[in-house]
Image (cartoon, rainbow, N blue to C red; front, top):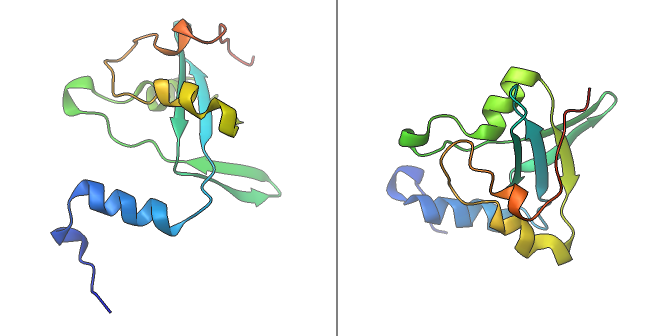
Length: 121
């Protein structure tokens, strides 16, 4: 048996180990809107159901490159306390991947392909 030491692995190797160990892996397509009504739509592969009573889901927002500051999804949710989780169907994977690039804050990448988003309240 081989020992795997995270401190000796590069980021891609750690990522592949984790995503290969949990399969199939649901993908959350999370939409959020900022306080100034800027929409954001992004896929998250670290997503799961935690509880049915109360209904609770979780997803993990990875760090953005330092020059970008917090990711739009995290900033929007912290500001508004609202988000919507959609589950990605297989036919939609390519479209969802389009929104997964690291981009500067506020870039309306999703809006080029998807309908307008609005707050839930």
